[in-house]
View 1 (tube, rainbow, N blue to C red):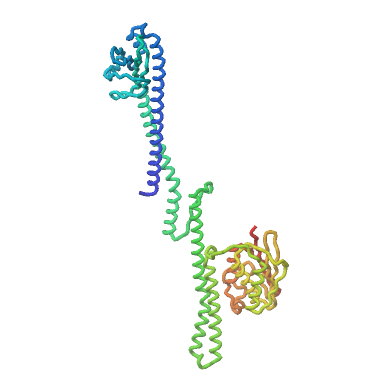
View 2: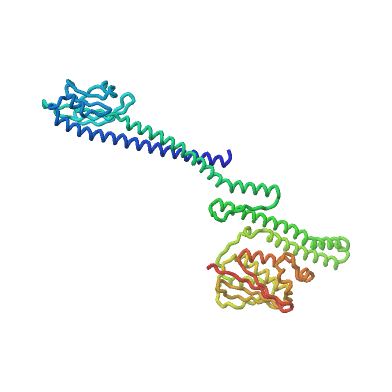
Length: 452
């Protein structure tokens, strides 16, 4: 049984059970009210009748007196303690009541009787006879009219239940369609993706913001991630095969040269080993960058916290000076704390990329300027190096793009550093702006936001 039919069946059964229980409760409640009302009415009539009979008994013959107060469908009689001379009058259509045993009661009685599938209200009340003795005035009244009304109510409730089931089944069908159609649409889209190999998304009605809409939105987001990762993997394979070809060719050439002349010529041996080592290091760095670029931002396990930008800059500058023996000067903000909301490790990685570019393409000291912004802070990394032509600025964040192929190859660049910096900046919410002039230098400005 598919999910649609399960929803139809379960919903219909649930509503049917609830409707039946509700109608049964209504019937039982109303039945109890009607019967009790009839018993109370019979009791009230009994009191009135006993009062009138007490006043007239002895002046009017008992049979005539009882006939005057005979119920339309019932029996009235006077019962003595000794059961002698018990006059009674019975309706023509209720002669079955005469078969009932005569019984004397010491007090008032009001109850419901069932005689041969008929329901009666029975009342007994003491009265004083003319001779001073106590007797029972007993009235038995048929409740068939009320019972027939209850039967009519039962039929009406049954018909109402059957008629109510029609909209129940229709509504359950509509409900199942409402719940299942997005799932069917999702299954259809997934099959189309499987058959065509192309990424497709669900068309969502933005009027609704319920769980079904959220499910569709999540599905589309998942497809976006899959497509982005798929494109990254394709790009990674293409870029890696293209960029690794050159260092592998160089390594192969020098290895062949080593094999032919390395043992005989120490100079060739040293040159070949240096070249192989250099290309191997560049290959390793390139592979690490490619692997990082191949990951989506959500796979980087970012941890956003309030980071003291001043401390991060001091640690980064000190580490860089020790590693490359280059002067890095921090200027601007004089306070010891300036907090931004970011991922500390990725921020350090971003700073290292731009410091490394400044080191490669300038020989003078590197200046870092830090300052406050209305909603955060900024960091400027300034070098007095060779600069970047204005025509190249729009493309510097493209993967494997090199302003000067020979110059970048010589410096060991792979064309991935700035592309990686753009990915990191987007992931941690940093905006990058670059100003550069040829033979003057380059200024990279990073804009960061505070938590508030």
